[in-house]
Length: 76
Image (cartoon, rainbow, N blue to C red; front, side):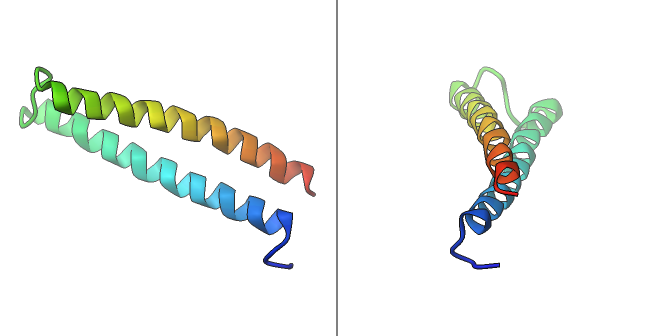
């Protein structure tokens, strides 16, 4: 397969999004683990804002992944 083809680009995009989503989920889980252990406080507005921003980013990436998979399927 030609590495410059639309299908190759779609495959690479899907793989990148899946990796980025997994990494972000791990980061968010790490924050929640710190909250549970008491090493971070919910009252800490900065940390809460970071977690919220990461969750919003995660939702956008998940939506992008759905679209990328649809595009990839259409190229078959």
